[in-house]
Length: 289
Image (cartoon, rainbow, N blue to C red; front, side, top):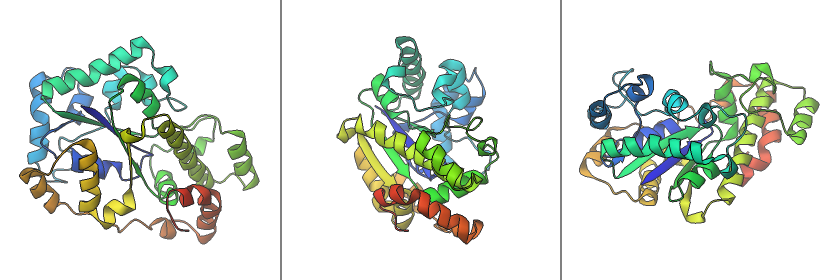
């Protein structure tokens, strides 16, 4: 069974991905497989076990699960990892679908994994992935857009400073372009609009999928009650608590220290701008202003 964890990026997806890939029945692509084209099958097979025996956070450059951008780029297509807009069912050509199935199915077979989990951030790609893998389930982790925008601005890979012609998300829709112009074209605002674009795309993709294939989790809820939210995700994916998974989970720290960091990192005027711009989306996702 192949399932996907999706999110905007800087949304808590790495935390949840690392929790879930500690489960002994879950297979995943490792950073070793991603970096080296000729990673032996034996390394792919034992990588998950080595990762699960390594204490969380040690060492910093440990073997770990990853999004496999380099491996997907070279073995499938750059289209999957670096598209200027969300991928839909119409983008799933037979050639591309075949390469993507081969990418995941061969790794799942080598790892002898009953469940294979992969994480995508940025565009959701869910309608595209559902077209290729009709039985796949999707866990969408969402975070307060003000926190996401603030975090994006601090990342070295953020390209918003190039404006809409050079950033990650292609041309701005007319209503968002007008909003950005009218509010002074600030970088903070553009990051907030980028988050709205991804939430719009995610909602469009979700509506195209069977309801039973979709679960949405809020990052803040995961931090507030890690066991309850993890239990919901495990049940959705058809996984159960095992003694090994229980032990690892009990040693893991969940900190909400930076949940409201955007209020410290941004000025009151910048926070107010995001409040105005993102209010509708935040309300729909259950966030209070």
